[in-house]
Amino acid sequence: MSTARRTLLIAVLVAAAGGLVFATGAAVVDGPGDTFAEERLAVHPVDGPNDAYAYLNDDDEIVVDVSGSNPKLPSDFEGVNPGTLASADGVFTITYTADEYARVWIEHPEENVTFVADGESIEGEANNVTLGPEETVAVGLEVDARGAVAGTQLGGDDFDIRAEIAEPESMSSNADGEEEDDDGDGLVTTVRRPAPASRAFEGRGLSPGEGVTFDAGAMEIVGDDVTLDRVRIEGVTGGDVAFETVGRPGPFASAGPLNDALGAAPNGYFEFDHAFTAEEVSRVRFSVSVDREYLNETGGDPDDISLYRRSESAPGGWERLETERVDPAVRRLLDLPEDRIHVTAPTDDFSVFAVATDRARIRATDASLDSEAVDAGESAVVRATVANEGRDDGARDVTLTADGEPLATQRVELDPDETASLAFEAAFDEPGTYDLAVDGVSAGTLAVGDPAGDGDEDDTASVEGGTDDGGTAAPDGDASGPPTEEPSGIDPSNLVGLAVFLAIVLASVALVRRMPRS
Image (cartoon, rainbow, N blue to C red):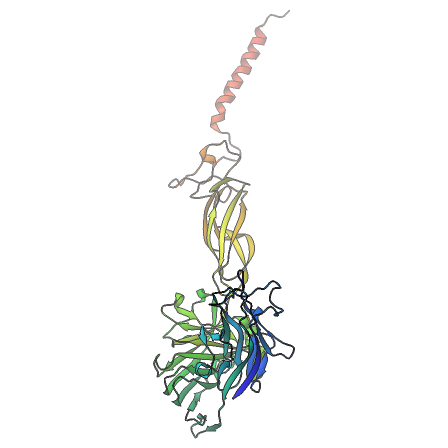
């Protein structure tokens, strides 16, 4: 049994109004921590909405402080409102860093304060939380001010974090190359290694309500670059469990490939074939690692490694699991290789799984023209909406094309689920019609007319077609098109005017000759 006594300050004066409001949010393990139980348990203040209520003192011990003495709370802090039950989901975290599992709970005498995890009390051994390797529990608070009046002091005291650490007592290998782990209480786990990319696991003598972690021995998913390292079975009813895993770089025929439309690039896949029911096992947690150099070669980001589960009901047929990257401090305590990225993810359904790198998926979703016709040399505005439908932020060049040829480019940077509105100006010197599109999404057809024309409709480019030399397009069904001028010919329509002009000139000459001379 290991115990760590830590400080709890709940000298909270209940305020008449405008008191403390706890935020809720997920806990994040980060930064220095308070370690005990031979450094197999690490306690960290959260990095999130409730990070003001816990901190490390000068001795690197956790302090939970909901009082006016807390240096991280505002100076005008007054307390909680009377008659209320205030709660905070995730004030500090407890992470187990050893190889098997631990049962953790908290004890303290204060009746008005309750330590909770997932909304349930973790006070007393009967309410312990079982943690597997690298597993973290977020611990929150409930402060009961019901029945109190303004000015009431709820009190405060130290609290004890207690843990029972269960370690394997013996390890042996049998003649078939199997590894057996006997914890001395009747629990025996067996891992068979018939091939580098497959494993068979068996656990015998499991106690009801307990869990067990199997060492997968870096089972290959994508060679040594992506491996399955551990599998933890939780919430068993007792008795025996058995399952097998198989890894491969490409998809399984039974599941098909992970759809890149989800904004994830698959690295590899593994299949989980089990011989237990959902009533016997409530949850499975996978621990996977990826080689850093492999990520660099594939253009992946260490923070974007995620696990997906094949699910017919999920959009795109795949469900993203709540994947967590193992904190560097935990990695060092577990002596995990530094040249690999280590992640864990839980699941309560079992099928085919994919290890993937989340990416941005930026594309144009619609495009339109402000005007469908302009004169040559005039600008038309093309508007487009661009969205990031992926799971990572990113940047991308978005291109306007005319008849498939690039015309203009703009660069956008978007967070996941973020959209942007773009505007392009398109101008053409040659009359005709142009099909405009933004990243392949049609914006419509632009008709460009000839500004030198006399204003007749025949001088405006047709929406249906155009010519390469800038002339007016022929109407549909008329193959002859407009008349063509000869290089040195005379238009017959001009001969009538010339004849009239010559007649006037000749008449004038005749009159001059007939006039009497003085």
